[in-house]
Image 1 (cartoon, helix red, strand yellow):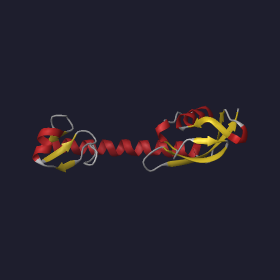
Image 2 (cartoon, helix red, strand yellow):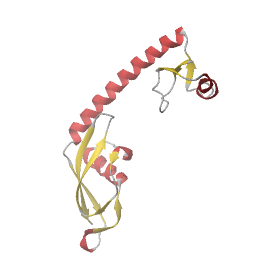
Image 3 (cartoon, helix red, strand yellow):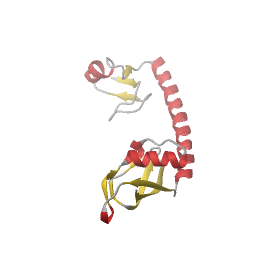
Image 4 (cartoon, helix red, strand yellow):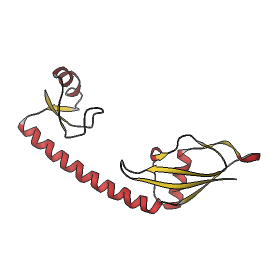
Length: 148
């Protein structure tokens, strides 16, 4: 059965995509939950407008992310934290701490989920941290953790 997705569905497609799925999957899952609608001529035309608006929105978001990445790229952010002897921190510096430090420095709110950190920082020093602003735009900053 051909369906047009009304929202993004993981492992299937994005809003406005025309997909061929099993009849039961469409009838019992996608359509009742409002995730898709059966493809007809009118719905396919509507899906085309959804795709156009999605691509325009994606282009605007990408341009905004590139502008922010240009401002943030190469910046040095200082995060104060309580530390003991030898530079070990009491606790750790996580993504939320880094996001709030970036907001204070750059004046731009950054969601903590966009900060890419393999594991929390547990020592005083410098660390390179990536910020994923868009699917294709990543800014790299230097985070310096200093003892309070």
